[in-house]
Every structure is written in structure tokens, then in C-alpha cells.
Length: 164
Image (cartoon, rainbow, N blue to C red):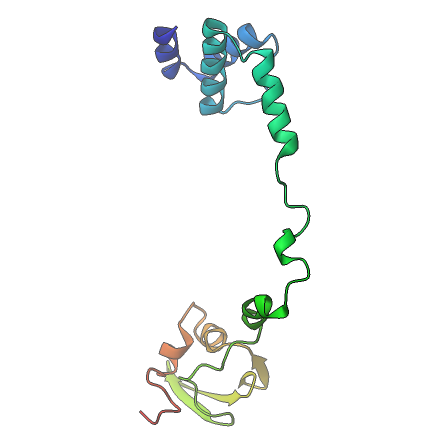
């Protein structure tokens, strides 16, 4: 049996499908070589050593049916105080404004291929050529036609609010 399994490692998909048909009595719907090899090798071992006993199969089914599937909250969390959930609620809050950005209303200027790019920082985004953008990278992509880091494109490297 072990030599036969080793020979299967070098078999083609067609040869594995033929062996699968021989062992299982039906054609495989798969053409995946690794899947076919594993199924055929498993079946060869099952034939050689015997399959699971009826008792073992029943025990496996009983374990599967009794498994804790978490279809409801664990008992220790039902009616729990809200303090347990504070980190979850805080993680959903809006992220803080990036400290590298200058104050709202600031106009940033950049020269690119002979073109002057003027962009205004807003409280909740950026404005470039009378259009609203959520990120500096989107403006840089609009200007250059390629992906850029927006902070690098506009030369924003130090913390703007810190005065550096």
C-alpha cells in the first residue's frame, strides 16, 4: 500500500481520476491534483486498515452535535455591565485628525511638471480645483496620474501643529 501511495505522487491528474473511479465507484468532479491524491491515498489506507468503527462514527457524530456553536452570547456576558463593552464602543469612534496636517483653511502649494497645484485643507477633507477629496493621496493621484503618498507629494513630513 505505501509503495502504491508513493507511486500516486508521480501520477498525472488523469491517472488519479481513474484510480478515484476505481476506489470510490464514481467519477471525481475535481481536477485538482493534490485533492485527488489525498482522497485516493486516504481511501487506500481505509481499505488496508479498515475504516472507523460504527462506535467511533457515532461518537464523532455525538461530539459534533453537542459542540458549543456559540449561537447565543456566553452566560457570563448576558446582562453584564456596560463597562465590559467600552473598548468595543470606543474602537468604533472616529479616528483623531492626523497631527501632521496643518490647520483647517491652510492652502498648500506644490509645483509639479511646471504646474502649480493649490489645495486647501478642510476640517473633514481637502479641496482641489473645486472638488472635495477625502485624502491627500487622492489629490496626488489626480495630479500625477499615478499612486503617491499624499504627505510625501505635498512635502508634509513633520508635525504641522507642533510648529516643526
